[in-house]
Image (tube, rainbow, N blue to C red):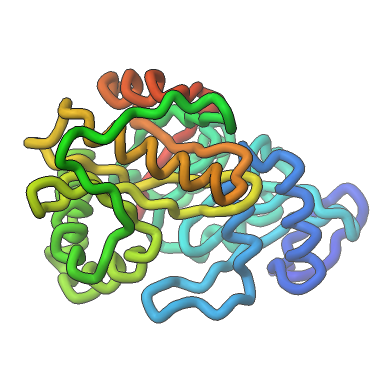
Length: 289
């Protein structure tokens, strides 16, 4: 297997991204940051000391000679560069094939190319769905006021059990397996590791909305893990919570804020449209084993 070798011209070969090659990949991805925001964040974090709750970032590049022609994150999840071509994908496939189970979430056309190859190698999909990538630009937000009695704030350690509940409930609503059942300690540890990124809305002393600012870069913020408790839906709490996260991102210097909505979730699409979000891409998410 030719891991790490520089190719002859015209035949891309893979190389793990470290040092100067990592920096080259960051510069490449930053040129189309909106479509590659998650991947950009993963690659930029390679080599940083990970917290005890996080999987260290790892990514591989496809090189034609010494020229970088494609980027794929391997951990903490599979993320493909937007418009990754088949030659670059085939080059990095030996690394991808070492992942026995995992999650890939990227532009739909790239995931289609990857999944054809993984399915031929016996991988099966536990979840396979399409999502709409939405973004709101600086100055385009139509903010929603907080309802009377709502408190918007950063999550605190005392919120851990509420956030564990929200994460599990969200997985159930999406039809995804609940890792808590097999490893409650590990699941709590994972949620605790994201606590600093969580923003909540509290009402009557209880958390009713949560969203995670998982990527916070000058190019943009990416919000994930959005969940509103059922009894708090259609009360304005979700709109106020998302408005607060977006405004925080812009105050921090982000050029835009983005998120993804599962295909068919009309209430969420309507909510984000009212706030000023607009679609810019179609994603595909596959949980495979």
